[in-house]
Length: 142
Image 1 (cartoon, one colour):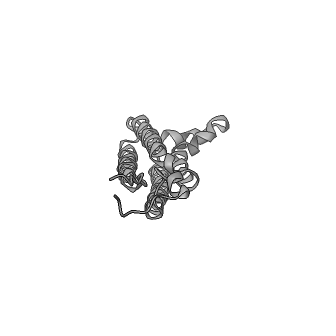
Image 2 (image 1 turned 60 degrees about the horizontal axis):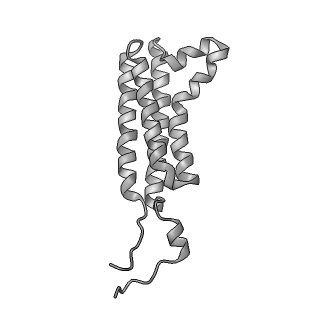
């Protein structure tokens, strides 16, 4: 017989979602990644070697590409705020987007591409860590 009380209905619905501390850590990390992307963009423009997503501002039709790298961390923040059980999947998607962004920039701006790859790695590590912060199901039989 277990000494634990049975889980209530609200607790069952929250299985797989992030705890508040992990949700805060994920959002804070993704906000820092967003700020880092802005700094990389400013650095690329200052040096005179814009990344592919900044070079697109020359043409008004492709100016929407400027937001592509920023969508990935923003999606993770939105997932953490609205449906935190989807945050790890959003983190995997964000990692893939940032990694693809860095691969495209290797030939044009290798230094900035390295920074983007490091941010993709940070997103990957954050996503792996977030798996530890998910709520688990309570098995009263144990």
